[in-house]
Image 1 (cartoon, rainbow, N blue to C red):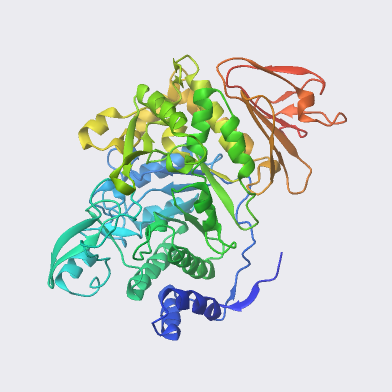
Image 2: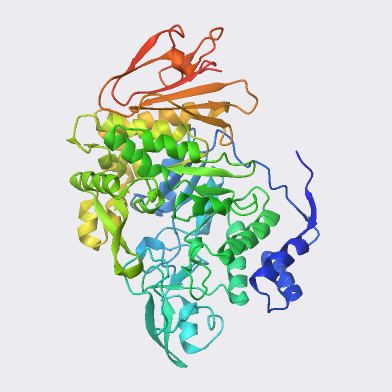
Length: 582
């Protein structure tokens, strides 16, 4: 392992602060940052090229109250369910915002410092962290209009006065990138009269002003607070929007990247094994920029994967998926991709801009709507509305293809995950995908929000009964998903940074090759993306003749390398030169 950088903490912080706050007293702000994170300023910077993960890592994504039981905190119910069902298959849990909130299912935080009392308390988070790495949401672009900071802002009091972005409604703000169709500015009454505050996401979510170093220090104290309570992975929600400059899109600006670098420097000095993950739902090359020079995010969301893989499964054609994968640079050591197919939000469509044309995108959207899905929209320059995301449970998204529903829902669903689990990076599995939960249209009707379609809640006893019933679709999906996860975590070739190459087979197949960093294992991943059998020759994979090859998923030896195989609809193979019990 390389020696730690000789650069000291003050040196690093000086560069960040000078770029973010050139008109401020840099030295004083450096010392304030060190004090806010309670750091030893003489600690060398940890090596940025360390891989803080292995093939055994995977993440379950869940709300704190997805699994509930009478007479106990939902976080206790979640912990009990995970210990019972997931201890041997996943390593980490991303608990979506578990703070008090007023809207957007947790993403309008009204108090960053406490756990929502209806979920539990910090002791529950600490208990979960004893068995799983806990990823917490840092919803730092904005806070709830009910947060004390915003109330203080309106009253001209500290802390809060000066913490929020104001704008002149007479200015031309048409270049500002928006993920929503609501007006950008909200008029509010303050001690100093009417002011217009910036609301990227909605009028209950008021954007915080990172150009104010006092606000930045508040955020740094929050990271220290979370580390002290067992959180060791930090999801920076909507972090691409945190920096505003007149006349720009106010998205992915240099200031936003510098904010991430500052947070990374402070967090890694406090906890060298902690993860920073950026949530930036933008086109691919803008997203890749958040790796920086291995000095920003440890992980970035692989946002193009869900819509591209869904499109491939909808059409039975891997052409666009292959082209995208060949364009993806391997993540350098110290960074990796966070792969996922479903989340509490929807299947974002911005990441396929330039990858799918409008007709291809719209055909996929129409298919999802026929399977009960909904569509969220965004406003672009000139006032035009474009589809922003598809809102649908992944289980229902796999009902069929662009030709309609068919009998291959379960197989298509498992195929999607077999592809995702084998790719370079760390897999994140939304809990409702693990459970095969379908569209929750009743919640959509109740809340009036399209995203509620994939945010169902389970009573734990009902859930356990469903998973114990071998005839239920939930049990079938869970058993097969658990099997894939258990197999995956034992394969060195599935290390998040192991070598990956895209293979060129027919369009109905999607195939790629992984090789362990020690080069003692390779795995050929071959996936039938169609509802029809697909034949291919093992010779097309260039398997070495002097090796015995095995399929890890079925635990079966493969025939002679000159044989031809027929894959059933949506069948997947993980062909390796090491038998599974190794």
